[in-house]
Image 1: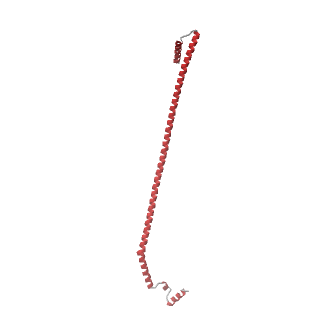
Image 2: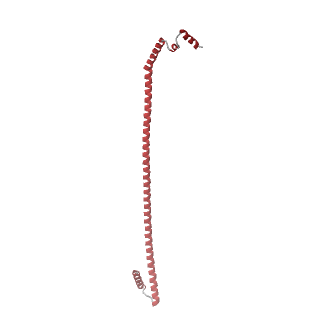
Length: 181
C-alpha cells in the first residue's frame, strides 16, 4: 500500500517511471562529493595501512618460508651426517669384528703352537725315559746274564772262576752282539 501513493504521485506529475530511479542533480553532486571525500580518506590512510599490513604479512610469510627452508636444509644435513656416522659405525663394526677374528685366529694359532710344543716335549721326555728305561733294563739284563753265565760256567767247570774277569768277558761279548745288530 505504500507503493500506491508513489505510483499516484508519478501519474499526477505526468512523467515516466524512470524519473523515480534517477536521483536529483543536487543529490547526485552531494553523493559524488561524499564519495570523493571517502575515497580520499581511504586512499590517504586506509590503503597505506592496508599495504603496510599486507607487506608485513608477506614478509612474515617469506621469513616463515625461509625458516622452513633453512630447517629443511638443516634436517637434510643432519640426516646426511647421521647416514655418514651410521656408515662409519658399520665400517667400525666390521673392523672390530675383523680384528676380533684375527685376534681369535692368533690366539688359536698360539694355543695350537703351545700345545704342539708341549706335546713334543712330552714325547721327547717319554722317549728319553723309554731310552733310559731300556738302557737300565739292558744293563740289568747284562748284569743278570753275566752273573748267570759265570754261575753256569762255575757249575760246569766245577770250580770257582775269577768272577770279575769272567764278567768282563761276558760284557765284551754282549757288546759285540749289540754292535753287530
